[in-house]
Image (cartoon, rainbow, N blue to C red; front, top):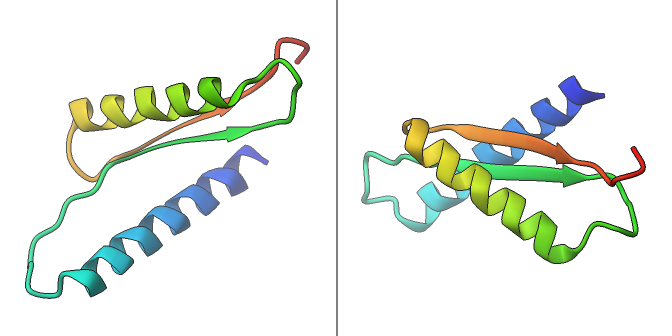
Length: 79
């Protein structure tokens, strides 16, 4: 479901922030923004489409402020 996917995205983003914290424990203030896309298989979706969508979402998250996650599900033409 859409809600469960969003929960999963937030969980993974939080784990990424925690991993960064372990790598740089001397830094006391961190911000992180993410652009995330999930994909339902479709032969008309290319890897370039997935990366481009995630990249666009990352820049949107950065533009809208700190500590944001922008998410979008990428669907094929037939859906």
